[in-house]
Image 1 (cartoon, rainbow, N blue to C red):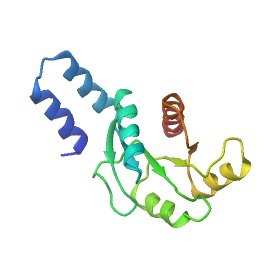
Image 2 (image 1 turned 30 degrees about the vertical axis):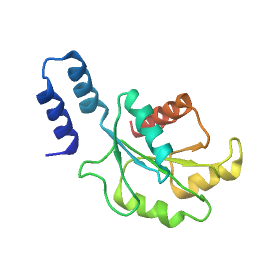
Image 3 (image 1 turned 45 degrees about the vertical axis):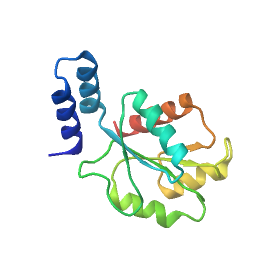
Image 4 (image 1 turned 180 degrees about the vertical axis):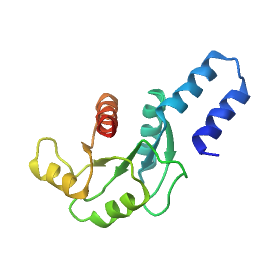
Amino acid sequence: MSVVTLLAASLTLACPEAPEIMHLRSLVLHKGYIVVIETDELIRGLLESWLGDAGYAVIIGDYEKRACEDEPRLVIANIPNPVRDEPLMRSMQGLYAAPVLLLSARFRRGLGESREAARRLGAKKVLPKPFTQEELLEAVRESLEVQC
């Protein structure tokens, strides 16, 4: 049984007829889940909160082992140095077939070298730090559209 199915089932068992539970269960089943790979605890918590508020189920992962048996809809990963962290990206791509949204303070808005580094690493989208909640959710939507 998948984590997404278990989460949806546990939400139903908690209080099967509560409207909030039915809404959460529906979101989990239809939106799937997002793996977040972020070493900074504060940023990781912020990502979990913002994505959760938008209706996404979030599972915390790392670069070395798969977070869940089900394939996520998206992987959001912090890449400390886009130029030198190609092995991290390759490791992640070996674990997940989902599109990757890269986060990094080293990426700069509007700079061609940031886009080129992301393209070389195989990322679908890049979100430079710092970013707003709206920028994050827009980047997630755009990354998920790539899948369709």
